[in-house]
Amino acid sequence: MKIKKDFILAFAISSIVVALDQISKLVVLKYKYLLPMKASFFANLNFVYVENRGISFGMLSEYNIPFWLGVLSFVISFYVIFLIIKSESKLELIGLSMILGGAIGNGIDRLFAGYVVDFIDLYYKNFHWPAFNFADTFITFGAVLFFITLLFYKSSNN
Image 1: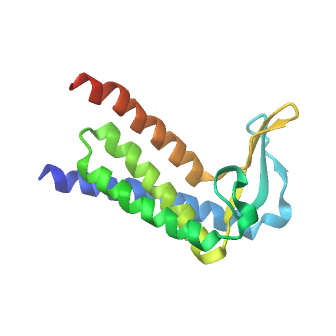
Image 2: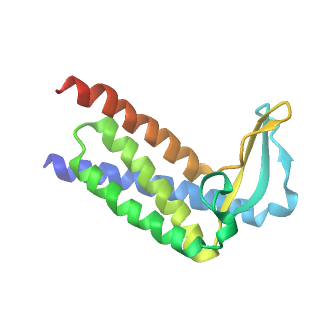
């Protein structure tokens, strides 16, 4: 019974991440003519429109391999599903589910558009972090949660 509840939780989290990611990208695509735009509610935040044809921070974009990066996203997704099945705590399950949803969200973009839409621009003075999207954010937070469980939960069981 626990496995079924965990699977439902993982599916729900991943689905919400994919939905938020894809809806946000559709909004950005619809209104990209308005970008860049300063976010008045949060200092040091702009909304921009970037077509990322590579992986994180645009790396590998010069090789024109977005389809294969999309395939890689889904291969990684299957491995993350395996890890979800083997997860030993709710925190680990939540982190992995966030990673899965983000990988699927960016994978959809790569397979169908040939690039990932990035639109969040955080900066401090003249330093701009590379543009990113909600999928990237969930992957990052999910990875932090996953590594917390690796460091604290798993080490306390040994």
